[in-house]
Length: 196
Length: 273
Image 1 (tube, helix red, strand yellow):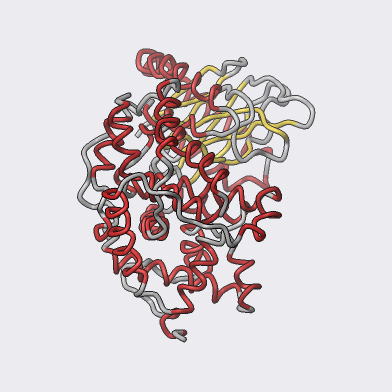
Image 2 (cartoon, rainbow over the protein chains, first blue to last red):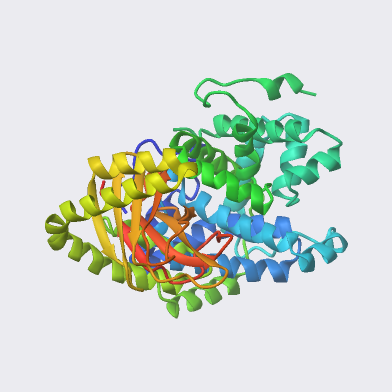
């Protein structure tokens, strides 16, 4: 892995766990302590992502564990030129969670769990504060989205719906959904400084 | 409602925002179905500008995950750290042409096979380093003859073969002995490569040879190699859109082709830069 390039896309506005990149780079060389630091910097985002999609704490923990194992195994593949380390691992987590939701097993009982309490117990007050602050910052940034953009993006990212399903859900042409999702992310990208 | 917003063009977001272009958002949100996703990622592989734009959207999408952050229970941390202590890592990619092959391990179906290939490729590259200079001319000559002969036989593939012949005549070739017997000669010119195989064994009933591009993002299909392994004869293919691919692989797959290699590739040829 070479030095970080200056032209990488990244979420500057939400760079709370900015150490994640360096930690992951060290972890790629077998440094377990560095991996622990990477875990600490990203676990809340990874866990929250998965929990939001799966809505089942036990399954979510399982997936989080799988994701971090994969991150450990494949740390050397992380390409800092393509995004942040946190983006990398959150993407991995989201993909796995969505795969589970779309498999019949997870999908069938998911709606029944819809009302499950999402908040896992915090481990410490400082961690809670840190996570809440960062989450609040990111959530504020999501405010740049129009209500219809937010609705579509939520259905996709948190609901695990495909763009076809969203088109059906919202009674919209597929093309409209495609551009709505894309434009929402463009807006988010610009708002958060995820920019080359 | 903000419909106007959705039609807005942004400079630097690429040329015509057709359907494919708009797929970047759904892709970044994991909102494509499997087939669409595979097709779009194929496009990303061939289009660095689109790849870059899509990566930015994916980074933006990951903020939705950050917005949902909830710390996991403490015991999970202990479990994860205990698990990684028992789990070997995949080695990092190095600076040589073999480096890209490390990414071959991304293959979900056959990580160990492709991992073994990385080691094998080291041998291949070493062999190329010492032997190719001597063989290049004769291999190129043979490949040129093969391409010319095929040109006469297959009118339906005439254009492809002409391009192959032109490539073979112009570029520097690398010849790799296939692990199953036979050989493959690869000539690269810019974003395209010509592949000429000879003497490959029959792929077996219902099977065919499939080409793969190995690059940092993993292994992607690069088309079938029709005619390979039939009557010990030569086969020719033109592979386009090499992008950042560092090697070209060849494996036996079900006749319809696979999305990822399902058998140990018989050839992994480094692509000269």
